[in-house]
Length: 475
Image (cartoon, rainbow, N blue to C red; front, side, top):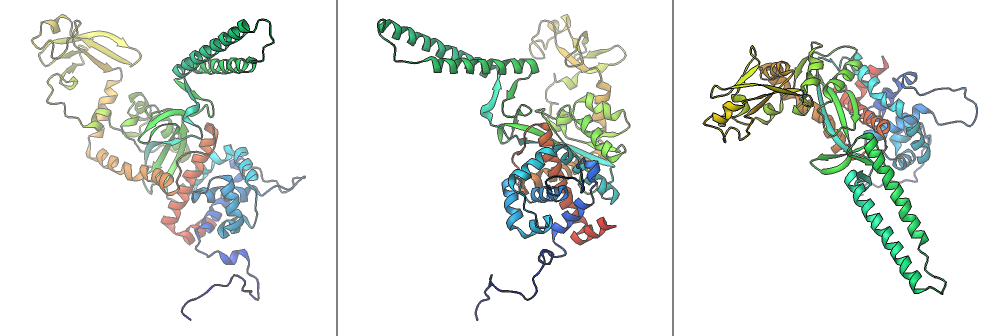
């Protein structure tokens, strides 16, 4: 015969068990061993075999179904239901259990708090296996779309425009009613506009409540589908999104901590993310590194005070703009620490003027000396003279900038991209995660924890092999 043909009706003398269909080196066995090693009491998932009433699906099997599904980009409850019925690896993992999509969705919804703790146990397991050293941590963030439409995002300006449009329509309806009444003085009106008028008034009330909510929260916008998400800007455009934060260990690129915030930028996240990662490590790291997006001196100072080496460039260092050609650049002004003033390139003194409390900086001005200077009009055209600001903690900024320029710090910073960007690339490209399925901070943090754990398990299998990881976890 020229070909080999399969026969789905072929009978075997001895029926095989489900376990016989899954090879010993199949990745699903590693996921099974990993989840069996977790402490479900610590996660907050109750395991009570003596519970009375209608029997529930085994929580351990349900968590296995979720984590294994997320590891291969299968996240929706309906797709997980399909895999549990037809995919042999899923059938093996759950022991033949076939929960429907409602049961899967309900389990995920009720155990969001427990799902957030999966990564913490995963990271501590990696520490125990000596895969995470905790010496150097890299911090970074990425934007992931929320499960909410941009159309449901409201700003003060949008509310005002909509209220103006509603008022115009209400006025138009009332005008039409008056016109009809004048034409049909002695007749019964067949035109009913009460319903539309009522709808417009209800809509106006709804928009007013949205406006009050925005003002109460003192925010620029709010989304009515998911109030926790914010409009964020990225390379892909502006979308209702969340900012996913990650702390990655330098040794093997494993994720130590994952978090989700609603801030549009990373500027105030450095200290909080390093502290959370150190809490997982049960010890302070030696070095913490991030890009210029985290260059808030106040945040960096919090970590530097703990004796942790901070490697974060300032925005000027990151941009690498050559300003030597500009004779009036801020860098050309020399600070006199003893007299608390600046000396301009022409030798004029810029004295202390006031403190900008918002920017936490002192402002120095040249005053009358600038108006008499031969470069007036080029250096500045302000009548009060050239102004130069200096942060209140500028000494810390200068120390951190000098540290970043050192050869060792440069070597650490070069490793940043290949370590901290890899997990985001795996999650977004390999697992095709372009948006969250759950809503609210608690929900998206649970999903982020699951996705980070998926990366860690995949990375552990790459480092130890499937059978090596299984045997290591069995010890």
